[in-house]
Image 1 (cartoon, rainbow, N blue to C red):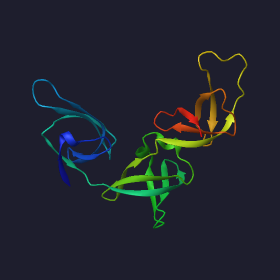
Image 2: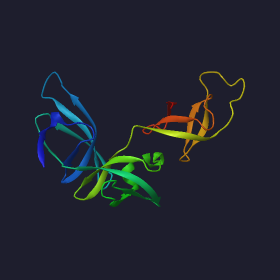
Image 3: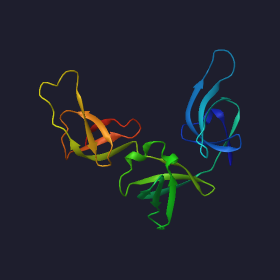
Image 4: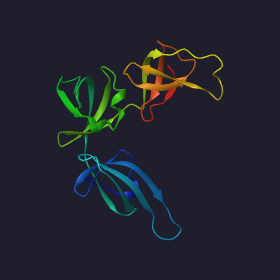
Length: 187
């Protein structure tokens, strides 16, 4: 494990906090007029999912956890367990639902994404910020319903409902933001 100064912390890094690996969810630096600079962080324990707020002095040393990153391809879901395969070695991996942090509803068949593992256990995922999906169910727009950029609810191919502009029709392909679950644009 390597040591860095707290002023080098970045979002999505993995650090050792209270002898357990944590992911940096948020990191803000403050430079007060009087006194030394500091970093306010929000850390998520990758084993328990608990979130902590901690303030580091900018000169304080932080231990960075060495994580291995592997590209895996989505195969199928079995309850709260998701099954992925390494496309190079064909080795299969089971991933717990908590790793996706609520984004699992945007998993598409054969999607490839990067997973972070620590001591052989998958602890995080780099989920794509946007996904391209097909609209499978959309109601027709109602005439006269056009005040203040109205929206309608459509169902996309993975069963999730998304609010979209009235002009989106069934069978079209749209782009959805995976962090907010909102419509971005047509594909």
